[in-house]
Picture (spheres, rainbow, N blue to C red):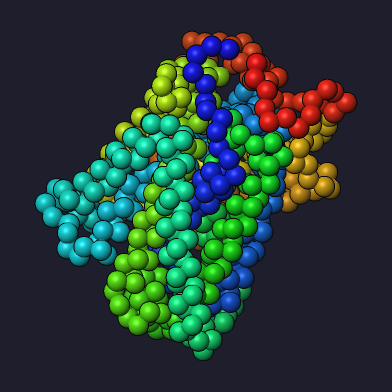
Length: 483
């Protein structure tokens, strides 16, 4: 096979930091107080443990499939082998919406952080969107950050993961300092009430938890760039989710030991204020915590660039999107056109204002859980349709865990529907979903008409033949094999 190929260089720490960093993001800095005041300290912890376990069910289905079919695009490959070309496009197009929405959110989160570090820096009024004043400096910070992250991803997976590891360490340092300070100077009395608003409070937080864990699915997207035994891919995916559960529980515990519910209600940035109080009230400690939050923004930003660009690349290679999006850079071996496409959207995102981006993230969340549901269904179908396929990370119990994953993903999907407390907002968020669906149908029809269904099927079968092995065959748990 000639021409540039994705670089297979990711090791254990690269994969873990990619997934963990994508999951953590900025949410733990701004919403921890909401979790605690909604359900109580132990109620919030319980909600995250339950939510994390539910996500693990989906993650286990991913883990088995990722170890069996380590190809770029992840969901694209699993759903194709289980249900065919149309289902593959739907699954992948849905998750691209989720990834792109998170990338856009991070472009807005960065200038928001600067409001805490540099008060009143927002200058140069441009216009107002949904009651939000967009200024030159505010949008400019987000746009500059987006250009930088696009450049990092453009330059190759080696640079991407190196920077990702550095910022993941920054997150961990900030978190460890918070936990240490709260353990020493905090007290159990501040944690009361342990439970607030009963089961309703726990459910309120539980609904939020799956979206705090979005990011583990970046691992399957980049699995063709992982230089590890196939079984390890599945193991690291589950380990990353467990690390995220421990992280969120530890942050909730630390904040609740330091701040009372009254102090949380009066705080604009609860986690930073908890850090400051734990170390004697100095704002410098709060700023260290915020720097950890910036680290979370960067790691999440990078992770979803990787996930989104590899998903676009996989569809384009299969002739389900314009083929040019499936080209790799001759020097950096990255799907650079897919990266630049996401970069354009991310760079323009701050100009839309913060309220509009909330709509985009909510609609993107629906795309993510729809993709989770399709992967769980693919897991069940492939267990029945292709039982002899080698599964280096094989789950016990047949399809039982897969059905748990289906129920969990379907249940979360229902929460977006009209009439539910967390339903998408009409018309804004539903319009985004409908426009995305229409855009996908148009691009798919044009691409399939231009390249032909036979091209897509032949490409996918050849790709699967490179990596899929069968029981009673001659394949072992190899690093990988190339055509």
